[in-house]
Length: 40
Image (cartoon, rainbow, N blue to C red; front, side, top):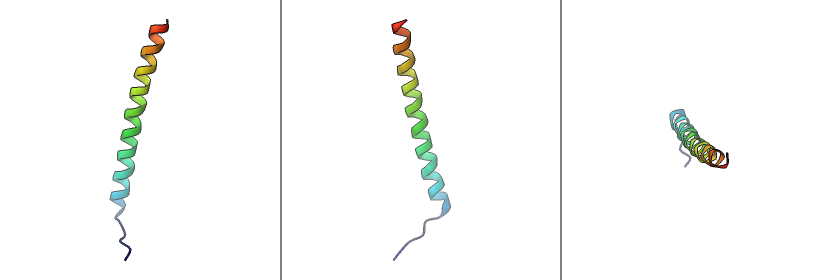
């Protein structure tokens, strides 16, 4: 039996993935800027 999920579930899942991606990019940018600042 296949259960069809509402579109809001998919949108929430994509929104959560988008938030995680933004957090990862922010942390990577902070680490990169810190290392770049230390080398100069």
